[in-house]
Length: 202
Image (cartoon, rainbow, N blue to C red):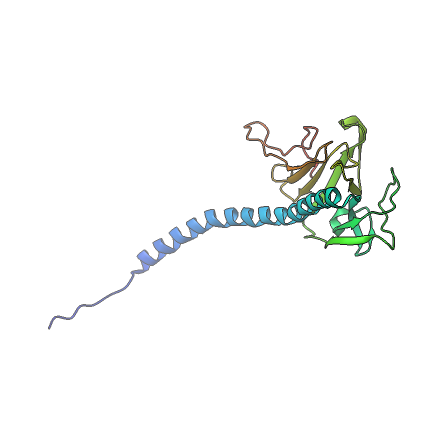
């Protein structure tokens, strides 16, 4: 009977295999990190999109004003969108108020907690449908006709990669909600606000 020896890998073969593996890994790791970062941005914009869409739907269905505001606590509005979001049935609001107020009789419909601290969520809106009327909103309110108190506006989430990787949500004068489209331009691939300007991610 003839016996066969399996001598395994030589040192040279092992080193070549390891070098090829390291090279492939160097390409895969940045790509994988980008996927993780993109998912983190979507995890911020996604719940906000759901909150605004459900607020608009509930307002039309119930005939009540429904407000989506920056969360201060689980029962009060604030001014910082990074602290989370509240959605509530706004029974006695005042037009033009700078910060939405949750009254004792108002019903809290949804609470979105604070998000990843490596992501910044901001908003811009307009009083006159153009960039000249821009202000920084702390809430958006829907009424039964489907319209929002914003004349136009954009929520945008940014990370350290800047506006070329930002994720944004537009709210139009009619109250409709849509995701910002990412341009495919060789000279400018920055995500734009509802007025066509590059998002001010820092």
